[in-house]
Length: 110
Image 1: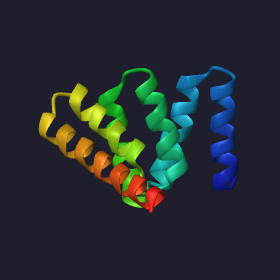
Image 2: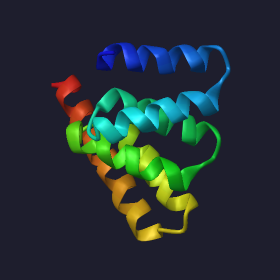
Image 3: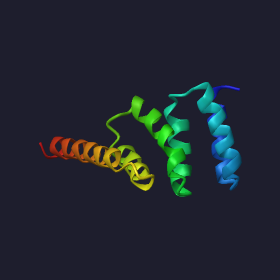
């Protein structure tokens, strides 16, 4: 089964409400494709929705390796760090998110 089908299968499990099985499928995909942005984003979102902040950190970091200028995901990583007690890391990520957002607004205004 190709990567796109595997991700679609995981998403279908999410739609059916089988979140744990979807996470299991996504973890398997990430083991095979560690920097796949789709799988990392989806599983990070699932972890965040369940307040599983410590588990969301690695997928967010993997996602941000590929798409570092995603201010929402930078902010989400800051939230994870904040909720796991890594305050300095949280502040760094919040500052990065704000900097990216400022650049985006500046470009839109000009």
